[in-house]
Image (tube, rainbow, N blue to C red):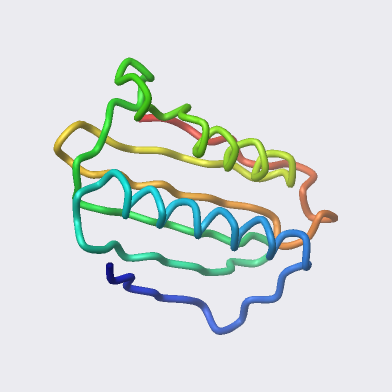
Length: 125
């Protein structure tokens, strides 16, 4: 499996946030490897002001994000766990996918617990 990795050189995050972001990236890439049926995916990691963003997108199998697709749904345990951890930090997760059209997951999280006063809300499209 290959991973195209792009990151912002200015990243400066609290250790707790860094740990959650790292675990989330690892889980998202594991999902690509296990379910997408493609040899790899690009991952983007960046910081804009007090927010850190992560995007993993593949052009693989995709799934029904409405949850009607059985075990491989937007609220499958892995994605549910990531969403809970990100929201606990004041962040959001967006999932875009369709059967046969790939999956794009975007995370946005405050770079520190102190900057989580008004988190954006995730969406499912």
